[in-house]
Image (cartoon, rainbow, N blue to C red; front, top):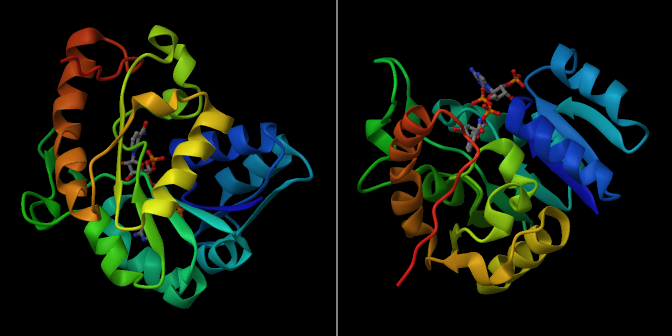
Length: 220
Ligand SMILES: NC(=O)c1ccc[n+]([C@@H]2O[C@H](COP(=O)([O-])OP(=O)(O)OC[C@H]3O[C@@H](n4cnc5c(N)ncnc54)[C@H](OP(=O)(O)O)[C@@H]3O)[C@@H](O)[C@H]2O)c1
């Protein structure tokens, strides 16, 4: 499959490498085609790895990951071109974090409580099927759920399109070792308010535990 990744940070590069290793074609997108991190990533990942600007990556892709700094959602999606997302699944990994007052971060006020980045992305890309997923775990765990508690821990997804959510569940199970029974569907994209809202708590827990390699396990 052709996978486009909007973002050249640690998340975008980690997800990109994982898909290369499972046999997919990946293009990283950024603001500039001379982005040094993207160039180095392509050199390290072989012939199935490419990079371009945000628009190139969105056009190239059959499936798109949103892995950019949430502050710049409008700029990134404008550069990528909304028409390039039509009928495509967009897996939204972004978080609306504000680190300006130190650690742990707070939520950006415009994407908290009564709105979220997931909803913002779905609103700006009406032709896309946005599925919020993976935003509540660290990058290395996103791509290999078995690194914590033998994959017995929960991932939270939400989105308006049930078929898209089922496809994402299958994709994550097949490529990243997530146990499908541990992927909890929280309903419509409005639930991104909930799954983004727990991320400042996650950062606080990381500080207490001294490692990002942990996750939530809900028992009843
Ligand atoms: N780090 C984690 O383990 C983790 C875990 C869960 C969720 N997340 C979320 O995943 C997303 C990616 O995180 P990250 O740490 O990999 O990267 P990041 O530093 O949050 O974002 C990097 C991307 O943001 C773009 N960007 C920065 N300034 C911009 C601007 N002014 N206009 C347009 N684009 C701009 C960069 O573009 P260029 O490529 O052009 O530089 C780059 O592609 C974030 O929303 C984060 O909250 C991270």
